[in-house]
Length: 126
Image 1 (cartoon, one colour):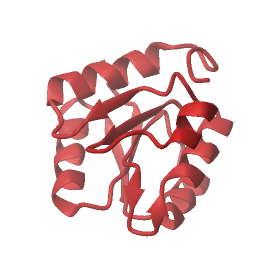
Image 2 (tube, rainbow, N blue to C red):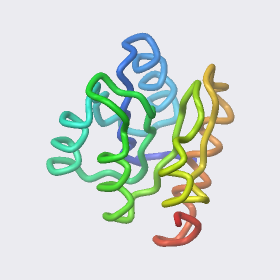
Image 3 (cartoon, rainbow, N blue to C red):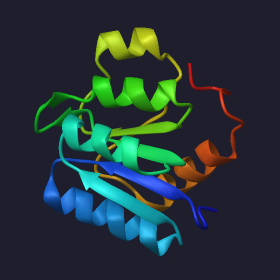
C-alpha cells in the first residue's frame, strides 16, 4: 500500500516520532525526518521529494500551520495526527483535512496514508 512512498514525519515527541518511523518503514515506505519543528519540516520539504506527510499539530516551535500550508500548496497530501482538535483557522481553510487521533492504531495509520497516496493530486484536500 505504501511501497516506496516517501512519508514526511513531523512530530516533536521523540517516542511518537520513533513509533511513526517504525510503522512507515514496516510498510515498505521511506521515512523522511522526523522533523520536530516547522523550521526543520520546511527545510526537509525543500530538500526531499515527499509523497505524503504525517503532521502533528503542536510542534516544538508552535502550531504546524506553516508546514501544512507549504505541503498543501505543493499538492502533498497531509494526514493530521494529534491528541487535540484541529484549530478553527485550519478547519476553515481545509475543511476536508483528514485527521487521526492519538494514540494511533498502526493499521488505521497505514490505511489512511495509503488512501491519501491513491487520490489524484488536488482531490479531497481542500
